[in-house]
Length: 252
View 1 (cartoon, rainbow, N blue to C red):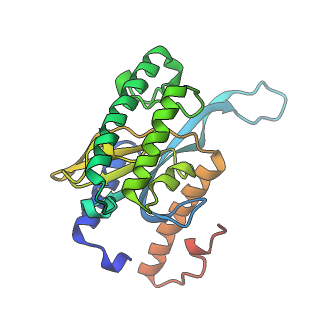
View 2 (cartoon, rainbow, N blue to C red):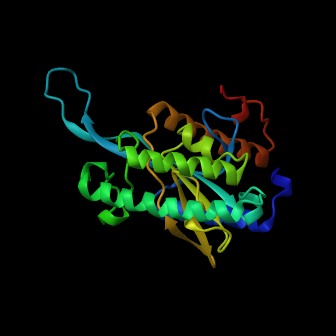
């Protein structure tokens, strides 16, 4: 509940919003309900996009291609201030995390090799290829898929009933980030498809890139609408207006 939020958790959310805006996500909000689920994300961000599209005309002159708005990129952020908030209490934790570390190293090696030999898998979002996210969602590679399955099984054993797997599996957003205090977990413990942002003083450092997910336009548009409605609800609360048509009243 928002009223029970700790100062540390609130700080992580604030830093997540700041980091998102520095990464050209100018539209941000907190505590936004996600599409296809009953989960609320600690923070959500949206990056607008444009494409060169035909400009509607009267049919007499050739259509001109001009830059016009299209549905952009969505990102979600989950904040964890303590290791106990993230990991399931288990006597097998040490053994499981060691196996996870080995599998994660294997995963990163395979992704690096696939990125080198299959350049088409790179999303081209960065000026430098080594920082590009790699979209392997539709690429079949038996060894890579086997490694992912083993990681998924071990993470389910380690984390217990958390929403990380479902948020990614339901394709709620293009990019998912875990935001944590320094030292509470290592890179190989990060859930599949999630990126890792670690607090360093008053800023966040990206320690692991998330895996890009191709999310349908209606889902991205729905998340943008929920973001806007959440902001409106807060504005209504400040101004004393009714919450009758708030974000929680939107169709699921």
